[in-house]
Image 1 (cartoon, helix red, strand yellow):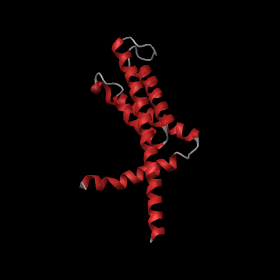
Image 2 (cartoon, rainbow, N blue to C red; image 1 turned 135 degrees about the vertical axis):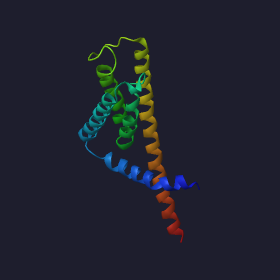
Image 3 (cartoon, rainbow, N blue to C red; image 1 turned 120 degrees about the horizontal axis):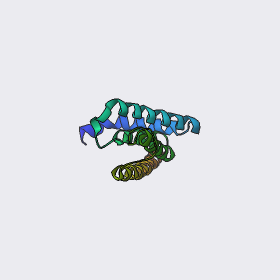
Image 4 (cartoon, rainbow, N blue to C red; image 1 turned 90 degrees about the vertical axis):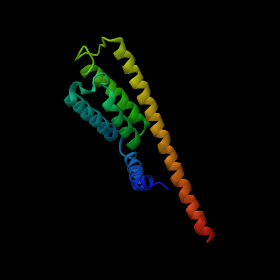
Length: 148
């Protein structure tokens, strides 16, 4: 087994356990935290300035993945749509407007939304797979104990 993979397993287990816990939180709390994460990422993006050049939406992807992973697909989709809305208003020209002047920005925004929604769905599928795998692993261990 690769040492790096073996070293990552505790982190994966911890993240999985956090996701199982946080998915049981009240809906208002999960969406409030998602909003906070996206607003914080917008603040970081504004602070970074024009160093990202033609990629104003790039910093939002980790937030989408994180919120989808810790909470659920709905939070990932909400994070995607909120990011798109805030970026359109704050980062795309004309500034402080929901209008988009450039056709390139329109296409980029549509692609961002599509990719974000697909990522939220994929993260949810991975979570469901991990839950099923954990349940089957527990069943195998219980079955093995019964045989012994």
